[in-house]
Length: 132
Ligand SMILES: [Zn+2]
Image 1 (tube, protein in one colour):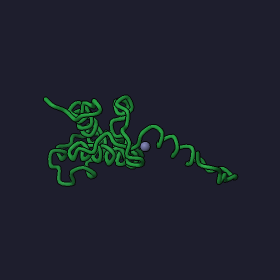
Image 2 (cartoon, rainbow, N blue to C red; image 1 turned 90 degrees about the vertical axis):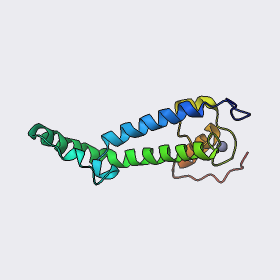
Image 3 (cartoon, protein in one colour; image 1 turned 180 degrees about the vertical axis):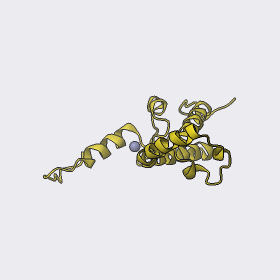
Image 4 (spheres, rainbow, N blue to C red; image 1 turned 45 degrees about the horizontal axis):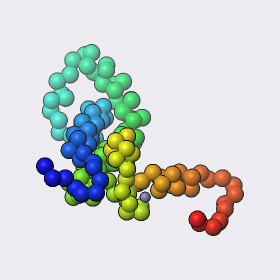
């Protein structure tokens, strides 16, 4: 079992986690989002119908958030497949295994993420300060 040299990321484990989280999200999300032609869902009781109304209302609120997350998960799975997983998309550096452990679909290293977050704050004043 020879793995990538350099850093020790358990991509198999992470892949499993991502897939699990993905199916969880899909089960929560609106069925229409996932598989429009799902015939299994058609078997609905009265109680089921009542639940599904509530379910749909919730899905409306959650859909955007979940879709975003699903996208991130899909991207992470793709990166695992093509071997680019674990690299920061902004600076190209390695994302720390700890960070990936906490956030398997992270696309940026902690430094770039922090930079984005501090830049994301929109105040009245704009500092065109010296960079570094
Ligand atoms: Zn970076």
